[in-house]
Length: 164
Image (cartoon, rainbow, N blue to C red; front, side, top):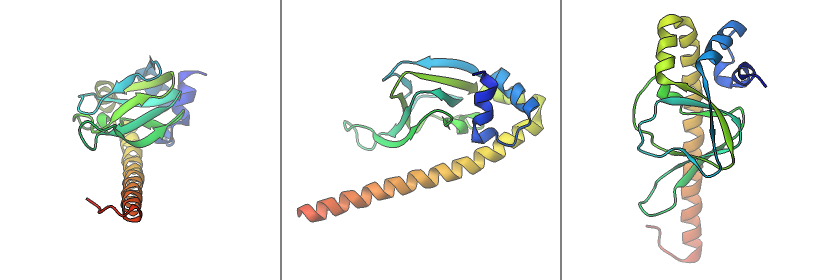
């Protein structure tokens, strides 16, 4: 399937015209990662948006040193991550790891800034959807984390251990 077809499927780009999708697709590069490879790790300075063409990615975060990362989200084809990197440079607050062989379409922050200068109306459409998506994703992550904490406290209470 052509690159533009994958870009068109991404909810972040749902308001874009075919012409705008073609412009965006030209700026994206294809990258592949083998199973168990890290796309990036928590704390790394990476400025890119990743759209999954093939495979699954696990996003996780360190909770305690020396303990396995806490899973946040599992993502598959058509889903994406790293979207805030398009507008804000900061170290990653989570790790992205390939659970299978993965193919990604990548838009770097530099290319998005170029796009913003050349076609500001297109960048504005993307930023609008980015904001909506980010709010929805954080709501999901917060709910999942709260559910995990409640489950942990209930399990400790049922086992007779005091919650920490």
